[in-house]
Length: 119
Image (tube, rainbow, N blue to C red):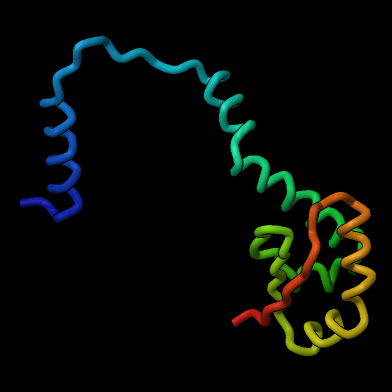
């Protein structure tokens, strides 16, 4: 007797094989699939994160940038995860306004920055 996972896969495969098909299955053109994905929300989100990371990489030193990670970007609110509590305090108190202005001028769509300490 196989594992539960193997049994689930076997049941799934048998259910797929039992399905009645009234038309043949055709493969999809990879170019069409890629175009559809590139127009989708996931690709737009990745483009925004790329722009945000580029601005932050230009703004911060390499050593500091490695301790910061953009976690989420929803409705204009960017959530940054900071690895060190001292660095978090320094960024909030001394760099917040300039970083916010740099993100706005780059056209990232950021209207608010929320900082979180890495667990």
